[in-house]
Image (cartoon, rainbow, N blue to C red; front, side, top):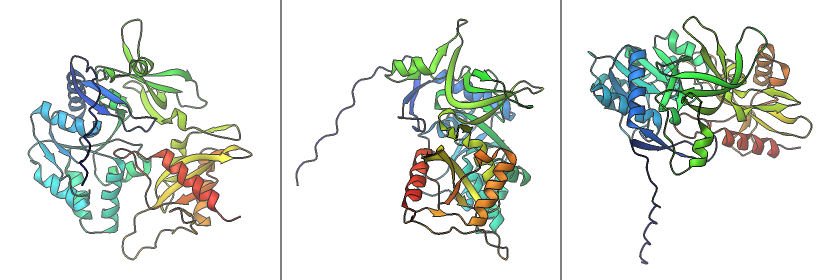
Length: 398
């Protein structure tokens, strides 16, 4: 057998003084970048999180420690000196496994966990269906003092179900460049600031919209070995305040305790159909409210007349409890792993979106897949979803 050639040695890259960690982004907005985080930024983020949640506690790790959400669970536990309970790496996330994990954590302390929406959905769906471990998983969820939910946008219906079931869910917004979440339930953590670049007033009661910028002691030092990208994303005001410009559109509304941020989706995800701008996140939230729909991802696909047309790619809801009516199954497929949704479901989705937004935002097509493609923990790979939709629509007969 021929000898295996040695792996190439990585080139030398200077790591800035004070750097504690270099994390690679998930690449959901382009090529992955290596983000330099200092120990001071991680500590500041952990302290602000514990302040918001009511004090330090024991953390449970259910996410990969190769991404910022998992790293922060470890960092918070270390800073608080309260211990860490880790889920087995080689086992899938299940309600029974989650219940066993929570049971291992000391009940005399405050207990916290970070989940992505898919994990929360599985816990609630298993409980609703009465499946094995479903009840225990829901009881474990209720026993926690806080469930941080991030990594991807959470459908409003999912949040309502979780909170109605007794889970103390806290939505988080942030990214690797901000040491993870720095806005909880729309309100910045202590030390964090939010503003909008080029804000545009909106009609109606909502506040201005624009590209979200974040500031605070949690900001990363920059991108390793990429000063140009660092200078583009991290900017310093005349007063010395550093800001990170995200790729997200947001709205700031006035609130008694200060401005509240609503994230509307990625700025570069906007679908332009017939000259009308459609924000996928707003459509996804409405599609996910329709009975029979589990998760939803809305994308634009090329159209010769309108430029783009709006397409919703969905999963079906989890099986209902025994004795209840089944949800709508998919229609004909094209061999691409994608199928057309039943006509009745398409009509319901279109009407629901049109009633709440406008007709141009209503999906022209609703397609069904077994699972949405993922990129990083909890993040839907929107580009892969668009490729699936285009491939299916092009493969349709006629």
